[in-house]
Image 1 (cartoon, chains in turn brown, cyan):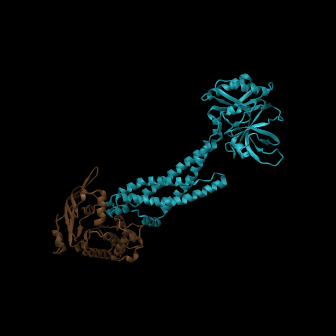
Image 2 (cartoon, rainbow over the protein chains, first blue to last red):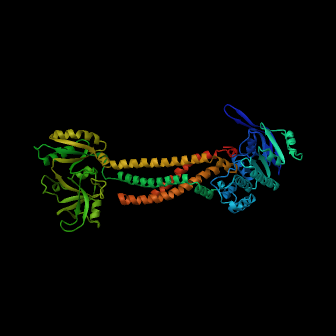
Image 3 (cartoon, rainbow over the protein chains, first blue to last red):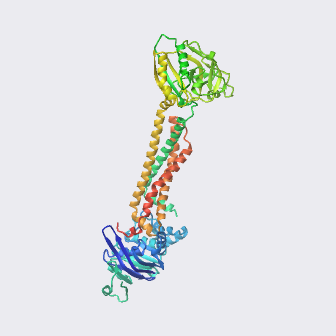
Length: 238
Length: 401
């Protein structure tokens, strides 16, 4: 479903050249749930941005559902993001002036889905995250965990095949983090492919597959596998 | 996909900036439409046809202090001298200069006083048979004064018995169209209308009847006189320079003041209108510029405030054009609200100006024109910030700001 081959990302300023990703290789198969970990500044967010087509890469090849992302125009990337990818951000990124219903509606409007169909999907997704009765509330009237659930509902509403989560529990306390994680696991069981960037080893261990990024490359996780003590997990090295 | 409903909902929840902008647009629309109408009205007034070849006419004021000459004779000699000067078409003495803001007017009765009857207001000029040619106006009907009809006198008891009137005056006084040959009265003194002039203006353009003018064949031989002179095209400046010396050479116990062209006379009379016109134009430019800058600034502020939101929208699938459209629609919605209030206020303000300052009634096309202009201006003001917003990278959504 997602294949990155030798993907590199270089940030160039007048004085400095920073290699955020170096010859990055990764294949994600349909239905997987992958946790991406790594120290701060290792390139996790850059990987997520490139995977989500939020920024271009410098070299290499990235195929998403057999589409060569590097050859797409800005509009085509926007459309592909809208149709195939659901985003869950660390800071929730809900639009404060829109109520929950309208927030979940945003990606559906960009896809041009008719109002009746939008309504059906929004109500269903808000029900799924347990906030069906609060559709008219504004984000600031909700707790952090609830806001993240709205963000998940927004990501799900477009029925994406691929969910990208950037530290989805980073701003939540442990109880709420667990609830959000359980929700993500449920979504994965329902068929969605999930790639989750996290710095929390405990959360990462709950994902069936872990990769660690160090210095812009996928690191060897043999050592990590031993620490996790879960031999049934598939560990992928660079 | 215009997102009108969510934009309206978002504006309702975060309304302070939008309301301030809406008020600014409303005030701009109300003031600019009235100012534009007043400007147009004044422009029409200032550019109106007077019926005179203004560029070829000038006047001079004579104050005679010498007592050793018969003024009646002197004035006739002066006129003859002026008419023979090279470059002069014609010249005539008069009690007043048209368009100058100084002269005489009276109600011309259709019946002799004290009989009750209708009076029609008209400005009046004294002059001889050369007056029409000097002013460059033509008779539509009837004839010019005959030499024996012109009274040159110092005796206030001697008055003429004929007059030439402007067509506007005749049409008002005799709506049936049979004014030529009719009698009109100043007090109980009758004057027969022997000629009708197509178009001419009296001393005051701002008079409520500026086109009502009557000329009497009469020269009051007084020490204070105006002489009106028409020159060949392009000769006026040269004649103006020479005329004083020539007249002084003929008789030097007098002073000449106020050698002034007819267009300059009119300009001075209209100076306050011209000033008002310019001030209104500056007001319009300043108001429109302030509103445009307000919209520009507010949109830029909104963009910097919503950077993360714009990045998130891009991440969720918005194209750059969607982001530009969002700001254009948001601006159009605010602007439409402002225009609705502004147009209503413009009409109300127009009514107040009509009632309090006797200005003409505001024509609705000025309100509509201003509204379109303000809408276009706001769209132009918002397009640059909106394009800038569209350049925000979707990766902003994952950054910790």
